[in-house]
Length: 121
Image 1 (cartoon, one colour):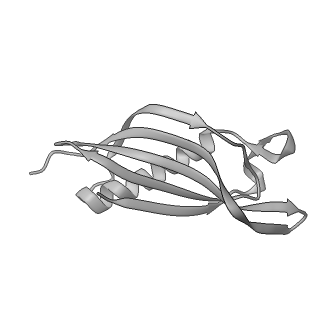
Image 2 (cartoon, rainbow, N blue to C red; image 1 turned 120 degrees about the vertical axis):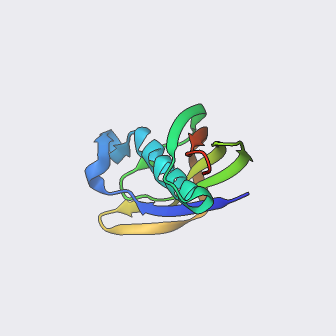
């Protein structure tokens, strides 16, 4: 199967809550981005996200984090692709402009979703 990984800095403009917390939809949007690359690499098409069968918010995402977002295809149908996703905090801001690489990355969000692609010609 195929695995695709993106890294993204979470800008402070995306903080919506006290403590510079970012809403859970931020990671879901990144899952859509990484799923698009999966479809391009596998099928030469951007594909469409059909559904999530599971989403788990396990830890907060904060402005100033660096996220590593991974998509791993676990099942391939005729037009569908089942994908496992993970959004993991690998760096975290520590105040002002200071930040650190985390010795132990923090799994923030996991999900399973399905994308569909056009039929082969």
